[in-house]
Amino acid sequence: MTVYLVGGGPGDPDLLTLRGAEVLAGADVVVYDRLSVTSLLDLAPPEAERISVGKQPGGPRTSQEDINALLVARGRAGQQVVRLKGGDPFLFARGGEEAAALAAAGIAFEVVPGITSAVAVPAYAGIPVTMRYSSTSLTVVTGHEDPAKGEGSVNWEAVAALGGTVVVLMGAARCRAICERLIAAGMDPQTPAAAVQWGTRPCQHTLRASLSTLADLAPQPPATIVIGEVAAADLAWFESRPLFGRRIVVTRSQPQAAALAADLRRRGAEAVELPVIAFEPPEDPDRLMRAAAEVGRYDWVVFTSPTGVARFFEQLRDARVLGGVQVAAIGPGTAAALGERNVVADLIPEQYVAEALLEALCDQVGPDGPGRVLIPRAETARDVLPDGLAAAGWDVDVVPAYRTVAPAPDPDTASLLAEAEVITFTSSSTVTNFADTYGADAAPKVVAAIGPITTATARSRGLEVTVEAAEHTVDGLIAALEQFFTR
Image (cartoon, rainbow, N blue to C red; front, top):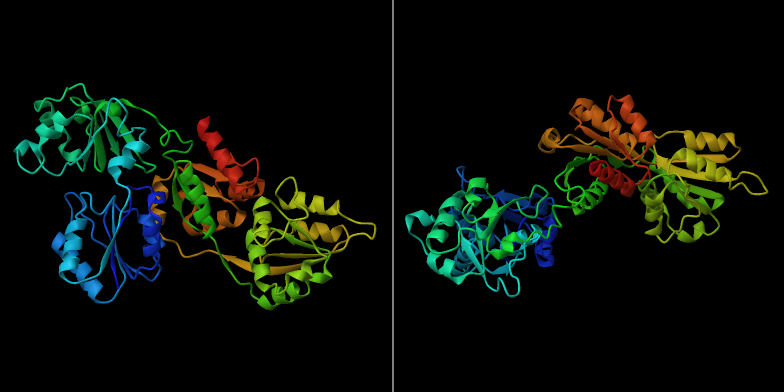
C-alpha cells in the first residue's frame, strides 16, 4: 500500500485538489494536523481511522519523530495512509522530512500537492501577490524563526533588498520582530502591509496597515502576513459575500444538509450541519411495493417531498407503467427529484404548500369527474391534501413511503449552537425534532423558516421566527437570509 502526503489547502474545503479527494476516499487511516479542515475528514470512509497529530501553540504536541514513526508503522501494516496537512506538504510543512523517513524505510509514498496559503490567502483577501511593473517577485518566508535572535537561515537583509512582495507564513507571534528586522535592513517603514487571519474561511479577517504599524494591530495565528505595494490593494470579493461570517445551523437530514450547507458556504457563511431528522422505511414497506407495482391503475401520483420520490422509485420496477399516469410535485425540489429519474412533473402549484397543491389538483378534474390519486408520503404528515381531495370526490390512496425519526444528538456539534447566529428549518418535522432534542431555548437568535407551515410549527414550539422565505424552497430560504442581513 501507499502513504499519501496530501496538501489540504489553506482552509476552504473547496480548494482541495481532485487527487486529494480521490485518495481520501480510499483511506484506511487519516493522520491530520490542527489546521487541516475538519470537513475534509468526511471525505474519508466512515470506517477509516482518524488520528490527530496537530501541533497547538502552547499546548500538547506530537513530535515530528513520532509522526514519522507512525506513518512508517501504518505503511508497513499495509494500510492506505493519508497524511493530511494544511497548505502544501512541501512548503514549510515538514513533508520533506516525512517523505525522507518513508523512503529510508522502503515505504511507497506519493506527494499530492496542495494550494499554498502563501498565494491563496492573499487572493481571498483581495491582494494579488504580484503586479506588473510594481511587484514582479515573490518571496515566501517562514515566521517560525525568531529574527530578534539573529539566528536561523532567513537572510532578512536579502529579503528587504530584493523588494517585490514578501509573504510570511506562521509569523503572527513574531510579527513585531519581523517588521522591525525588515525596517532595520532598509525596507521603508511606510511599505503597505497586511495580515490575513484564518484566511479562506468564513471567519477570515484582514488587518491592513504599514510595515511600521502592523504589529500594533496584534494579528493572531493562524495569519498570513503580506508586505509590499500589493498589500495596499483591496480587491475584495470573499469578505463581501452576502452571508460572509454568519454562522448558520442547518437542520436538514443528510445528504440534504450537505447540499444546503454547500450553498451557504458559497455565499460566505459558516454552515454547521446539525441534522435533526432522518428517514427510515415505513412500518409496512410491502404497501409501497404493491402501490408502485399497481401505479398504472391511478390517474395521478402526487409527490410531496424529494424523499417520497426516492423511496417510491426504489420500488418501481418498470417505468413504463407510468405511461398513462399524470404526476404532480409540491414544489421545484420535488420536481427536480423526479427530473433526476427522467420524469417531468405535469403539475407544480404556484405556491409550494399542500393547500395550493390541493387547489391546483381540483382544477384538473376532467369531464368524467375526479379520478384516482396515489400519494406516497411520510408516515406522519398533515392531512390537508388527502382529506381535501377526498372531500372533492377523489378516490385517494395514501401510502407511507418513509418514516421521519430524530437521530441521536451530537454533543460536539450541539455545542456550536451557542455560537451560531442563525438556525434554518425546512419542514415542521425539523422544528419538532429540534425542540424535542435540544429545546427551543437552544436556538440561535435568528430563526429562519422555509414557509408559513414551518413558521406556524416553530411558533407553536416557542420559537420566534425572524425570517420566512417568500418562495418556499431552499433557494428562497437562502435569498430571504441574504435580504435580511442586507437590511
